[in-house]
Length: 387
Image (cartoon, rainbow, N blue to C red):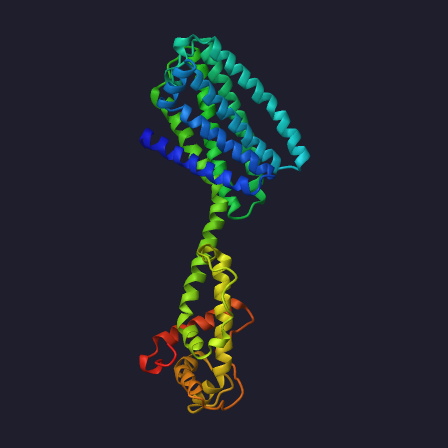
């Protein structure tokens, strides 16, 4: 994959995730786990532009050569600390997790101090080189990359350990998200370990093939968006399931229209009135479309109860029955509504019409939807009064 395209994808993923996490944090400002995860994404997002050529040139020209590289690594290390903080907090009670998180500040602080001193000790002309061309024979350069790399491997290993532990007891979709996170963390640990080993090899004066360096960087670059994907997968899976349910309810609501329109035309007084809110936002929410669908089912049932004696009378002309099934109801409903509208007296008491097999709302919804579909498919000559 082209490096520019990969960088663009990574930047887009980080920006979208950052906006989403901040919006979640605004809704739940007291959630400590969300604090840790949001801060992790914030630091990763701040680190990303400092690693680009444009960001490096701008900041180095503004402050001094090497500033962009130092801040990029500091933000990345803080992001890794926040990640381990998230897992430590989620794996224990609040007090225990807080104590562990405070202890983890020690290696982070030591690493930040070490890489800062190493950058200061590096000659100015050598500070701006990327990792592949950095001179590991210089002690400042070697210490900078080795210290940052070792902390990266350490923090990622801690996070991977807790991820695998959580995975054992997690259920879908959280388990799927944790598997993606575990694969991404394992890739980061592998890439970080390879780069740390290569630091020593280059320090000893041996040459490292360029494809090996680029391969380690590519694994790391691919693992980062994969890691973000794992973090957002569980809530996105829930959102997707909710969207599918919303679409199913929306379609069912409109599939009931032929039956509801025919009954409502004859029994307008059975309408339950408007929903509590009629805004487009309410219509887009799952609760809004569910409420409308539920009201439509109630109105259809009320209308069917009132017209059921007429349907039963028409159906009984062909065969005796104790209740009216789907086919008979669809066949005789238009004529029954016409008889009611004409003022014909009710021939008998109400009889069951297209009863569901259980008290489950979904079963009732399926029966009425099937009746509405059958009514819609009936010949136009039979439905001129109710459609």
